[in-house]
Length: 149
Image 1: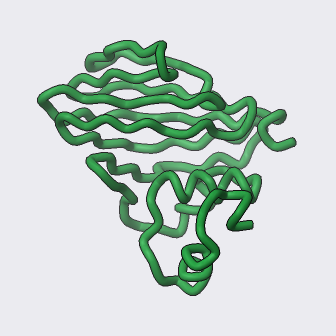
Image 2: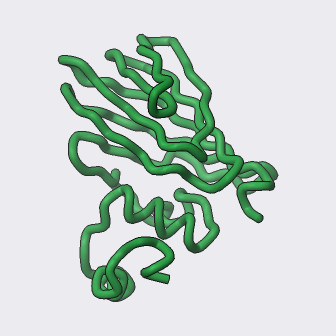
């Protein structure tokens, strides 16, 4: 499991014992390896999870087909975050609520302002980048059937 998720066995062991503070990337890698939505791993949390200027809170975890998760994301000023590819067939839509944010697939990003949305393939690496102000966003992630194969 650890090798498949690209993390050290000792880190996985600490997480299994309830010790440790996994990064967002570690949680995504484990979700991908376990073939479960990211939200399933963070659902029990009543607080946000975050690192390096990005904080994410699960709003709702869908149970339908396709499975749709909704998140509230806050990004600190002057933050650049590159997210790894999610499971095959996964799509993400980001809507900026306040501030401005550059987002999208690596090499194909777009600046978004309040009220603007962007949908992109989350099964490719993607980025979030802010300027000099905080950005708050609503993120929906759709795990299509092919993402579960």
